[in-house]
Length: 584
Image (cartoon, rainbow, N blue to C red; front, top):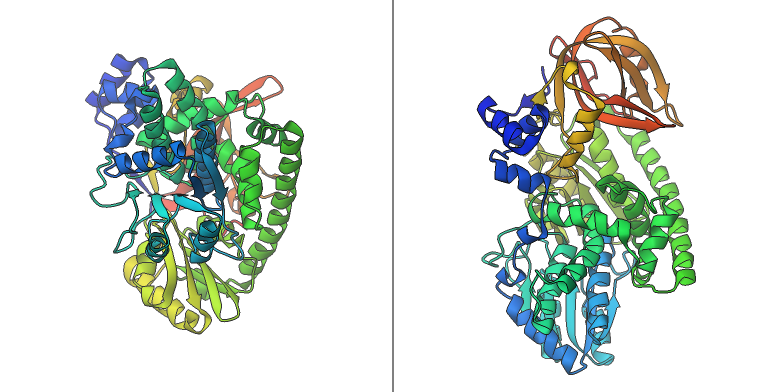
């Protein structure tokens, strides 16, 4: 059975785009397949501008938030920024802290310890803030469900301004302002901002109020561009859809990150080998974000925050070294947990639509382990860390399965539950884990079926090899930044011959390289994590098949070539890669 669906792209529409916008027919077909059908839409998508960003005052509570913050700044009240320990929360904290400090505010920041405090605001920390004379707390990337904490704060003379992007509960906190695009009737037209995107909108609104500047002045545009380096970091790292405003801000943010003069960011780029390198979204996902995240996972989230706020080169390099050490330790622990879970996976579990595991692991890395397993197994994964009476759960999911909704249906077992369709977290009494796991499996079966969902691909275009070239592959990079909601283009080529040259590559021989042919010249191709398929592919040399792939440009030693990253191979509409194949 084929594992793809081909998007529709009417010929008249893509020919119009190709002619009017001056792009290749293939790029035009992909744009139309993704719903971008007019020349204006195509130009805006391929060449976005800052003018397309929405006015922050569209948020219903923005005026209240700005007025309270400006008053606090002018009166030199003590302000506390309360963030989260992931990259989105850290960059949100750094962005708002930088700005308020620049304004002369009496401001401090706090990021909770992942291991000892967990996510979100606690009454204990609010009480400490009161003892230190704080009269205003501004949350970033958290707070929209902190109703009890907001009540305690108000009763004790502390105002709250909530900025968040997570789903609210049944009741909003009693705060001066709640700025969250997912709050019903909030007034804002784009719901997919990351936490740092919401923080950026608050800073933008305050800047307009204090300076009287509008977004078309040179000074204001410089501020926006410099801030967008942090916005790009947090937005890409939080895996929100890279569409709409997120796409615009990440596009400009990557360029701002390349050109940044901020000491901490430059030392981080230097340490990751990315200084003076043209940056793409995957550089954040796989090289920068893991280092910033590692500190929070190991319980040291204030280190990356201080790095992003540092003006001292020596200090910045010392903190970057600390991040690298945390990242190496995180990788070691992660590998141990992955190896353990993979070893314990049974045939019965691999036949189920959801994987649920319980163990006494390091809770700081279970999120990334669950994410890796979800991608490898093409189904949602829930890992529960048990330690005494309470357990901490982490859930990650894949396209086609809203893990937040699955957990919602089991909420009677959960405490401090929150998240979104692809990621969620919760606390649970150890005595309830068995009942919770049984119900979650039943819910998953009713929603997803008895068997795990088949990995399917949404095909942007059907092509022949004679349409491909280095120039075309380079042009497709205009679709960047790639990520959630804007993936790399997936193409389908039919009647392709497996030419040979099959070999395993990579440090652990984990990848599979081979040549495919459709016409006079074979093209070098590969499957990431497909090393174990070597024997199966060797038996298919000379066979005619259909392939799903993305064209890539490979540059090495001055030589430029076209490679194909292959996702799946089909022989007579049947996948060559077995349904139960697990790439480890």
